[in-house]
Image (cartoon, rainbow, N blue to C red; front, side, top):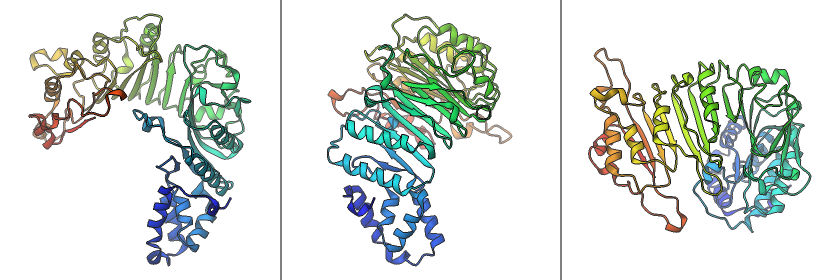
Length: 490
């Protein structure tokens, strides 16, 4: 494919004009130096997003004849591509792009990149949404599975309704694949999805896999090679459909082979799983619904994970009732440094019920915690009071005394008072002169980083100023900021 036949988006044309302005002064660069410059400029994937497209290899190839010749000769410059906004970047942005005109041009650029990458190993990220035309979705997915034999990094993220109604996609011939993250989000309560609305992954042919993270309508089959199990570093598997799975494991359980992965450092566990004994595990994700109270207590109390430093707990809404969670026996929490708590609602807007008393019991088990992230619709004044340190005479009731970073995200600011936040920060802030002991050694630094997202995400209300926007100008917070406190309010 010739790029001269492609009508370039305006953002690419702008980059091209900027590059041409400097050609005279650097046209004499020797090829080796120029090659390093181009490789550095193409170190991040080409990103195909309407009005935000970045295609550095294409820009370089149209600067001048020598640049074009070199760019076209280096297939690796064209081998890393991304389509659409990642879920993290898109979160909170309901903008629906007018893609009637841009889709066709960006699809041509996508095909151009794949063509010019020739036989280079591919790194591909594909984020599909409802506003992508159905024909475009099918074209992009087909192009990926056609080239699966040379993919080393693959990330696919979409909803169940996005997959085309056609023969199910099968990922099975990817011997170079080292990183696989694939999420086809499904409604947990809709039951089994049609067999044509899934992506099937056959693990038996993956000889280079190091990171595996799949969820939703992604069916796993085949037996992972023994040498791959030994070198696997990341494992995440969360299936929300009623479809049976066949992993060719003794118990047909995705976690029945976790004990054969001695070097795994990050895993995600949803639902029932065996006792974990992983000496190298540093990051653990747990997905819990209201029926998992006993499972969570058993897992945290009976597992041997001495290197664990970070944990993510995700609480899913369910209609089957609620049980209070008891965390006091969670011995793997004692040395935890980073804890993230996320409450994920169902499509009808309901959330898992989690009271401040439950939060207190959990945080009482994490005395070494340095960083805490709470993302919940139920952050209340009692939550802020719980996190506020008491005077020395009441120090026994304090939680997380070593906390240095706090992130609070909630969709309701009505119960948030500036004074509650000021009291919390003031109780944990330590002036610089108090952070060094008599011998000059640095001790616990106290709270140094606070991030608050406490305004309602109500599109009908329009964009308005967060209620706590003036907090950085209020004493003593203003003085804390001058002394080094990082405070971010959105």
